[in-house]
Image 1 (cartoon, rainbow, N blue to C red):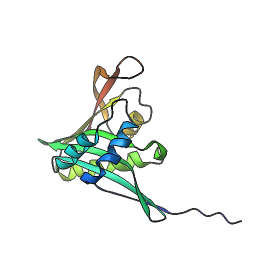
Image 2 (image 1 turned 90 degrees about the vertical axis):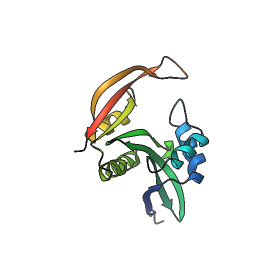
Image 3 (image 1 turned 135 degrees about the horizontal axis):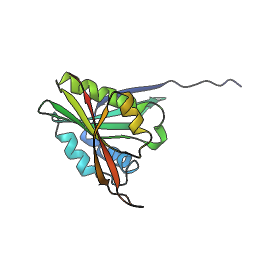
Amino acid sequence: MSWFRREVRTHIDNAMTEDSRVLADIHGRSFDRGWSAEEMRAMISAHPVVEVLALRRSDSGKATTAGFVVLRIAGGEAEILTLAVDPQYRRCGYGKLLMEEALRHAYRDRAGAVFLEVDETNRAAVPLYSALGFETVGRRARYYERQDGPAGSALVMRLRLG
């Protein structure tokens, strides 16, 4: 029997309002407090101040959304509002691809720095952001509400682009 590996193609493009339910589902499975489809639709509609970039993967002709990043650019700065990858596609490098694309958008739009907040206990995200050059510049105690325990603290991180 011959085994072969199917080629999986990925691309990142702007999310469309019809993506809002899928993005809300991915976000809801990624965080204690998910965003609704209406909240996602409002963010997508706020383009160009807010950019919602979706990573699509295609296997045997069927495209699925594997993750997304929400980036706000204003006043010479950018902020990553959220990054979420569908749990079944984690540890495949999609988070890094999304972040790199968001950083390209911020640079293209002449942002001097990019900020984000991340749960200090997020063992996947904190090392990713650090590897991309983000530095911790602050901490917000009890920032993230949790369903199963006390609120978690957020690290405020910054990457200088200019």
